[in-house]
Image (cartoon, rainbow, N blue to C red; front, side, top):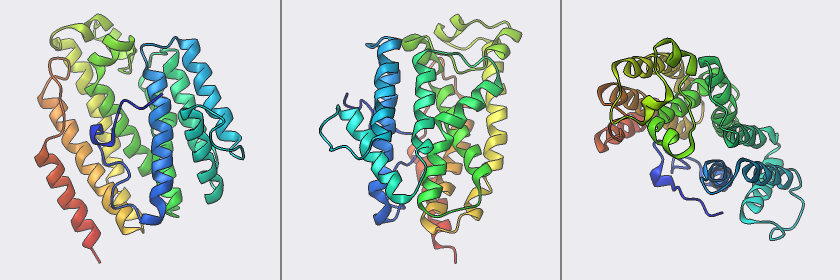
Amino acid sequence: MTSQKTKRAENFPVGSLLIPRHLRADVHAYYGFARLADDIADSPALSPDEKKSRLRAMKDALEENHRVLGEYSEEQNAAQRLGAHLTQRGLGLTLATDLLEAFLWDADNNPCRTWADLINYCQYSACPVGRFLMAIHGETAGETESDALCSALQILNHVQDASDDWAALQRVYIPKDWMSTAGVSTSGLSESRSSKELRAVLNRVLDNTDRLINTAAALPRLIQTRGLAAEATICVSLAKRLSHRLRQSDPIEESVSLSGLDWGLAGGRGLLRLLRP
């Protein structure tokens, strides 16, 4: 399965030039693996059982990375390749298998019933990405802050895509108990714009996400590697800007995304962090 998404389509920097050259192959292997697995989980053409079968085949290939490339499908080869990178770096395979657990959850379209469910989902779907980047850079501090940043970025994407996720996959990441308390049903995600009640639920999600961003704001100061600290600075800045934009505009009514100015300002902050002695 060829990935339908590209680095340019992402809200946040992926494998940027701030990553040292000798680590970029590791990052690209991780990104390629995650992208292909995500495409399986999000495919409208595959049944839940087909999705789970292919994701489990990726896990098998990941754990058997001694085999010769070419014996497997594209996605299994990507898993095998990542397994070799992780083994070479002395890193645990859970940095990858946790992602697969999240995608298996997606394959069954399990809703997030509570905020705790959503945070638990992010522990598998998003936090391993930050932990991987920290690990390959040899960073040992800041796991709590990294998890907060990755979770915030994931949840902001869920708010952006709430309408599309429901329309395409009948998938809901907005806590269903909050929707129920507000008298909002999932049909509200299919309307032309947010009702007052749904808008209040989305704002509640953003309130909690802003608390995660506030925790994540300390991360750049905890990172010793300048390039990674700069990238964390950029991501924190973009998360703040996207949260603000999602409050100002209705993601049910229109596509809400970061502007060129948002990227420019975040890049400037990252450059200042990079140049800081």
